[in-house]
Image (cartoon, rainbow, N blue to C red; front, side, top):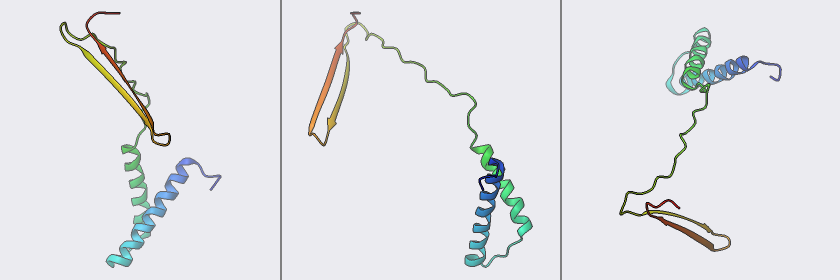
Length: 102
């Protein structure tokens, strides 16, 4: 298996999966199996999987959020906290801002 290409490995594992599904259908549902149909089915499933699970060619970046002053007459409150369960210690930080730029 070390010498197989990625495409060959994908096909091999999808074929194993279809063999497993057909085996279960035969044992538990009394179905029959046609090996030539299984290979076609395996390749169709692989193509469908690849279409659905494509990796985007470019990573999307989130827009950088910029802090905005609150409107006149209002305050903006930012709170954060942390707790270390092992040390049974914690802390909290609070920042209250008005519209004035510091």
